[in-house]
Amino acid sequence: MTKRAGMETIRVIGVGNAWRGDDAVGLQAACRLRERLGPSVEVIEAEGDGLALLNLMEGIDHVILIDAAKGGGRPGTTVRLDLSMESRWGTVVPCSTHAIGVADAIDLARALGRLPKRIILYGIEIESVESGASLSEPVREGIDAVVEQVHQEVERSRCMNCI
Amino acid sequence: MRVTVKDGEVRDVELRIFEPPRYFEAFLVGRHYAEVPDIVARICGICPVAYQMSAVHALEQAFGILVPGPIRDLRRLLYCAEWIESHALHVYMLHAPDFLGYDGAIDMAKDHRDAVTRGLRLKRAGNRLLALLGGRSVHPVSVKVGGFSRVPTRHELQGLTDELLWARDAAIETVQWVAGFEKPAFRQDYTFAALAPEDEYPFNEGPIRSSRGLHIEACDFEHHFTESQVPYSTALHSTLNGASYLVGPAARLHLNASRLSPLAKHAWEETSLGLPVFNPFNTIVARSVEILFALEEALRVIQAYEMPRSPSVSVTPRAGVGMACTEAPRGMLYHRYAVDEQGTIREAKIIPPTSQNQRRIEDDLRAFVPQVLNLSTKEAALACERVIRCYDPCISCATHFLRLEVCEATT
Picture (tube, rainbow over the protein chains, first blue to last red):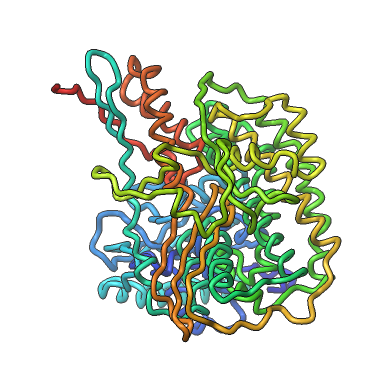
């Protein structure tokens, strides 16, 4: 994505594992957002280990992450965390079935002083991460909500850029 | 992990790993052979290349295909990328904190920012190479039976040379760094098993050899290596002639040290550790030497690369059985497929390195636990975790993964 003078770079990253049930939620939300937002916003689906996130966030001003979360709430519930303001995880922690997870990657980027200027995490409360299962119904509804919220977030960010 | 004690002496150690069910083996049955590389790449987020390489080599054996020159070299290059990425992740992010007294990489990063930054850039060098060859960095999509769906140009590959040269120097520093760590005194008499070809450090080919004289082809794997269910864990255990054995960097190095690239050989000799590596805490050094080897090998392949006229050889399926072993970062990965004349998979068998090492990990723990029985349960669990982490098992991904249970034997 080319950066125009005075224009902030923005990137949407959906995280998850396509083959582990509800853990695919971030990937599917990203896929939907790619259609919704069009070519002017870069949308990435990130599978595998969380450390790759450090590379994906590099040089980007505003990162929006979407991931599965386990916070004990009802499946499909969504939560928005501003990680640029909040350095503690509280009750909602991104949920990873693999390697170093999103939470570790964020903490590591923070420890190294490499966190983007603005980083927002959207978490969708999940139910099951069983191998080969498809998304559960309440979680699908969570995607609808997150797609809407992220769309608005991106629009707000673009407006800020225009001022 | 369950430890049984009688009168202050360790009677038994059982490591219960709850692996996800062997869903993939069943899932592959009934699929067309061409779908296999993409499916098996999903088994592991850290080592998808290994699963793809074992799969395509096994299927090519079943179809009687040999993949020549530049495509063969590109497959070695792809494996280099995975070793660099996976080994750098383990050495810097998961293992080094154990030796330097930190809970994990995040704590370590505060005091050792330069080292952690170096590790991340090393890992990224592997990642960039993988992205170029595999299309996507995490689950490469371009590997297929017979070769690749597309191959890079000479120019594309050479664009990575400067970063790989930086990484090669960083890998030399890595070997020196980890060789300087203080290691706990602990020694076990291992049986090492690895691929060991005549003329190169192994990735995709070669007979399987052991340090006790075994010398077989992959098609005889199941005649010598036995996989069995144990009642206390869903993970299967492998044995060689009824006993545990070790796969991975220390085994590969033991059986292939003379075939290391020049700088890797020199760096290993400089550490003065010598072979065999009988202290599991020194596997971090063997692993780092392999990062250096993988970078030298990647640079060699890129330097010599001539783009092949076709990215793959033609494939005609035929009914049969094919087996192959390749060297995943964690050790030998065995695949066997039975295929019908249409190329449909009728049976699939996958034996990953972590399950091969599992019996060996238990044997280590049985010998190690008496040293830590006088510690608190929490401290003892941490000490045992450090032993397990030497093997870079998939479970080491979690910083704190071990629940230790000590019980008194009733008989």
